[in-house]
Image 1: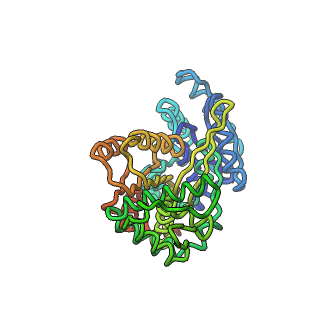
Image 2 (image 1 turned 180 degrees about the horizontal axis):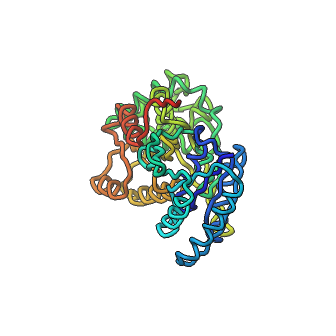
Image 3 (image 1 turned 135 degrees about the vertical axis):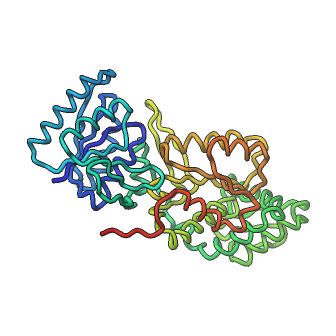
Length: 389
């Protein structure tokens, strides 16, 4: 039996990904932590137990008392020694004083010690010397990732958008490539589709002024040609609810998700992706819900993409701060986030996004969305092709 030992901290993803790596042969894991980390341990159990990995929580003192911490760790080491098992220490996580104390104890017992390098996601051996480092396999999915950070999620079924796959590719690309020209028209189309939603109907009458909008007319022609709507006598009628949602701004989310799906066929470090992820977090007695427009896990790192078809003149900071907060809460230190905006971004928004560590794709880049997303995913590290002995 292979037993892995690691220290729980606020970003324990690398404790989990190492266990899912096939060559680790992990059958049991012991998480070291303080009593206040019981909830974190419970979340880790939700991910690992269904995968057949036994879990154990070993409590150490909260006080910064190195002799006492080492004494407790020696007790654990002696217990493991009596079991005659293969013991490995994952030194990737943990507060400095706990991590160094554990390293000294496990090094004394001559047990292998490794660390998962954050950017490359490689398993690097600290002891013994001479072992070759290797790329950790990408097995963690979106649901597992969010569970580790205390959230639960519901993934959107593709039923409502799957019939529009061809439309998403053709019309989505056309609209994205002509953002500046079509921007005002799309704002009006969004308003019309919102009116239908509020009135729970699929048809809406255009005002005389709206009927004269050239850009709006171009968009309606695109919808008609794709079989998503009909237009007669100043009344726009959507073919179904999916078509209305497409026109209501969701076309950009669906298009981005479609591009991610295309890239995944070429970039094997993309291990999971989903559209419209509903995320629920418990804060006290209240459950808070957030929606991730597009989420993907690349090289064992959560990536969140927020899609915005409206301008950010008034709420730009709120959008960016919220995206940064969600990224940190749901993905830890290695998570990454991007805003894809159909409307032009102010210099202030661009500067703020840079300060917050957020990636941006604006209307200038939307016509070549696949290239820009591909480059962003590459910066998550890892290898495009993985090979294991």
